Length: 225
Image 1 (tube, rainbow, N blue to C red):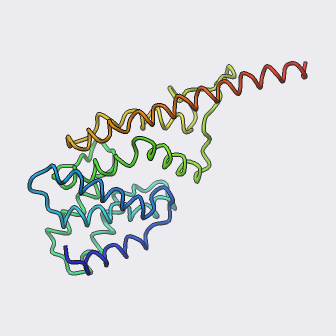
Image 2: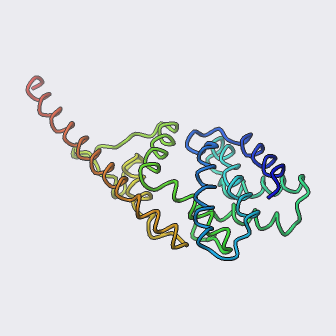
Image 3: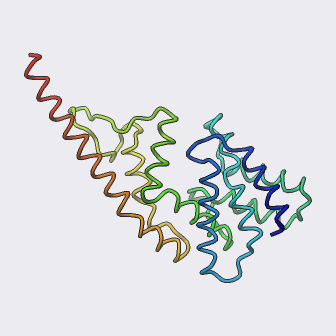
C-alpha cells in the first residue's frame, strides 16, 4: 500500500475514535493481529485487509451516541463514502465495506471472504485474554454498568442466567464463549494461548467478591439486629 494512502486512511480513522475501549490503539492492535494471521494464509489482498482494519470501527462513535445503531453497518457505509472520495475503485470499496459489515458477531452476517475472516479473527483476539478483560471493564465503566449483581437471595451472581447486565454477565455470555468462533487456525491458536488469563481473572474476582460480601453481611449482623 502506498504510504500516502495509508496516512490518509489512518487520519480519517483517528477522527472517528472517541470510545476508550475502541480507540486508535485498539485499531493498531487489530491491524497487527490481522497481519500476523495473514502471514499464515495464501492469497491475501493486503490493501483490502489493511484498509478494512483501519476503518472497521469508524461507526463506533455513531453507536455510542445512538445505541439502536450497529457500528458494523454504519461503519461499512461511512468507509464506503470516505473511500469513494479518495478515488478508490468500486470493487475495492465493496471489498473493504464487506469486511467491516461482517466483522461483528451476528449470525445473519458471517464473514465470507478471506480478508473478512481475518479481520473478524483479528478483532476478536483483542477481546480474549487479559486485554479483553481490560477493554470490557473500560467499556462497561463508561456505560455505568456494575461489576456484578446480587441475586434475590442476597448472594453474588456469577453472571449466568437471566440476570441484570454486569461484567460477570458479559463474561459468561460473550467472553467465555469466544474461543470456538475463530475462522483461521492462527487466530484460534493465539486466542487459546490467552484464555487462561481471562479465566483466572474472572474466577479470582468472583471468589473475592463473594467472600467480601459474605464477611460483610456477617459483620453487619453483629451490630445491627
